[in-house]
Length: 242
Image (cartoon, rainbow, N blue to C red; front, side):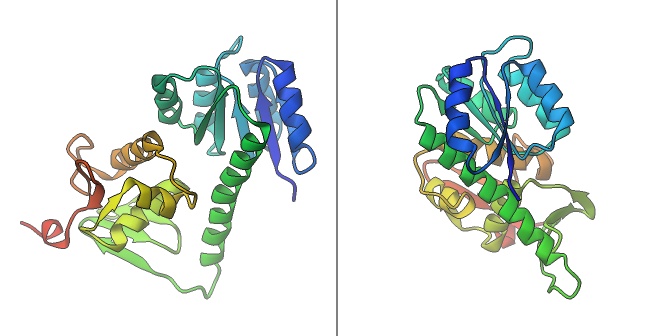
């Protein structure tokens, strides 16, 4: 079944160019301001959104916040604002990727395909694990129980819903408590793509994960930073310390 891509940019030439490259494989919706995008998103089933930041009515950050209140679909920000603070802000608000202008349309298409693959193939895998008769498995460490059948986390018995990336991060860390993973190892295991020194993406996703699992995210107990090396999950002897 063809996926539906929502393109949002106040420059019609950019939307037209991307649409030309996308419409052979996807159904494409287009909007030229944030409010029009909200209306389209509300009326249609959108599988992924590509949005600009500088737009009238609702800017890209406001649109991203609206999308995240209503949906978990992947969002790629494409913007001429290439400052690191803009990228961190976009990722922090829930963007899954950030591409700066000028860009190659083929790169945008490749990023879209990668996000769709990660999001929807993961969900298909999760669904197959939930079929009757499928083997169940879970990992228990400290107060955390990661249910691999439902792709759900429990903390002291309370369920915590994880995004696909958060689940894969936690599964990686909990598989070998105490092991230090470099950023390169984390990115290539979780995102299944070659690492291109995208530290901000990893940092933001780990921050989101800590917000969900830690009693004090500013002083993490489970997912710990190893300065100059990467990250590790708490060791088993630390988990069982009195």
